[in-house]
Structures are given as structure tokens and as C-alpha cells.
Image 1: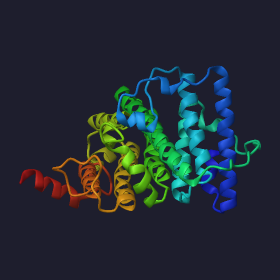
Image 2 (image 1 turned 180 degrees about the vertical axis):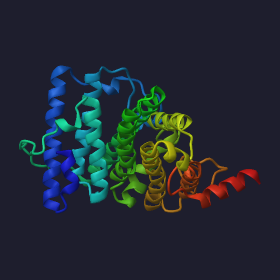
Image 3 (image 1 turned 135 degrees about the vertical axis):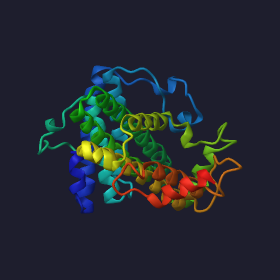
Image 4 (image 1 turned 90 degrees about the horizontal axis):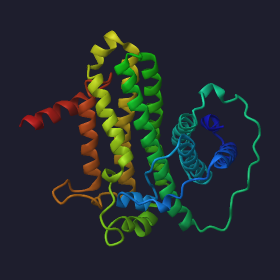
Length: 332
């Protein structure tokens, strides 16, 4: 059902498809819960202010428990997407990431999904919640989907790197493709979280992520899942550091697969810039260091430029203007 979402353009069909997908995810949650109940996450200690705020925890889980908790995130995300005003393009990207997460976490082969899934009873949407409570919940739900994608992407990239070291190129290509699905879903999940009025975000959410509401300002640097992903990407490029031309000459499929992943990573950085601008305009980041750039957008733009410069020679359409500028700055 998740794979069908990208083909639904009309609002009524889109909403029905989302409700059916949410109902199917709910049935999978029930089936996994029957094997063993979910771990009470609130009983686990938070390892950072960010984990506490976004209600994310780390712990050792069995395969069944990992699948259950991942599908719970997907289920909540789908239920919220039934009402969130997300664009069709981002909806398709987030749904693709959710589908890949379910496949990876449950160990299901993609071909096992029937072309025409059986009808699922679609519950009516709940009524009575204030829009403010929906918006506040959406901020957490979208970020939890983003965390899930980070972790799954880190695992997929690490798997691909391990396969490359073992000389199993075909398996590495499959896992690079899986990782690219997740990375393309990064900005979609963040946009999902941000489908709240900017005025409401500024008035009711932003101040809760900075002192005195929390001990330290929340920052992406505190997300361990994202750190794992960045470390996995660094390790991948240590195994295949060749330029695009060099890699394409000896392994064209690998060059394209690596390039698709790196392009998605650059676009994630670019979209983070525009998303921040839409939410906070030219204000400073709540986690910004005093010696940093003048505002959040400028800092994120620098991060994008550094990433684009690093990848310029590794992708087919590299940003060589930025790469040259960064090189000159480093040697000045």
C-alpha cells in the first residue's frame, strides 16, 4: 500500500490511500505486538536533551522489537500524513522511505508485496483535537520519522561498505539504492515535521527547545542517528574515494549508485537551508555559537557548500565552482 501512494494525485484518492496505508501499518503493529509488547521507552534514560525532547531512546532490541518500534513510528507518521498538508512529491519520498524501513526491519523481500493488496478497513479520522495539539504532535512525529530514516540509512550504507570490502558488488549496489531511498526521505520527513504555521512554531515550539525550557539548546549535532549516518558515509568514501570518471571507467553501476546517494545528501543540505528560511527567516539559530555566521540560514548554507565541495569530483554533475572557492579559502 505504501508504494501506491506516489500514484495518487487527486486529494480524495490520496487521503484514502493514506488511511488504508495507516490501517495496514496498524495491523502490522498488532501482529508484531502479539509476539512481544513494545519496550516502554520512557523508562529508558535519555542520552541527550534532544532524545528527551523528541521522545527518542536507545537500547538493545531483538529483531522483533526493532521491527515493532520502527513500524510504530511509520504508523504514527502515516496517521499524521492523512491530515498534514505535505506536497505530493515529498509524500512520495517519505512514503518510499517508510516502505523501505518496513521491508528492512521485517526482513520482507520487496517482491513479497502483492500488486493488489486486499482491502483494509479504514477507520474514520479522530475528532476533537485542537489544531495546536496536532501541530505540536506533528513536530515530534516528523522528527521521529527522520530519526528512523537516519538509522536505517546508516545501516544500509554500512552494509554496502562491508559488501564492497568483501568484493560483493551486486549486494553493495542494492544497499546503496536502499540508502538513497532513505536519504531522499530525509528532507521530506523534516518538511512533514514543519507543516505547521510558522507563527505557531515561533510562538509555541521554538522556545521550548532552548534554555530555560531545556538544559542546552537543541541541535542536529545531538542526534546520534545522524552522527552514525555521517560516519557511515565517511567510511564508504574511504573504500571508494575515486573520482566519478575513474570509478565510472572501472565500475559504471557503482559510480552511478554512489553518485545518486551523494546527490541526495547534497539536496538534503540544500533543502534544510530553504526549510529553515521558511520557518525562522533571518533569525539566528537557537544553538548557534557566538563566533558563527549571522543567522541559521547562513550556517546551514555553509554546511551545504562544504558537502558540495567534498563531493564535487565524486559525482557526475559536481559543483566545481564551490569546490574551487572552498579550496582557495583553505589555502589563503
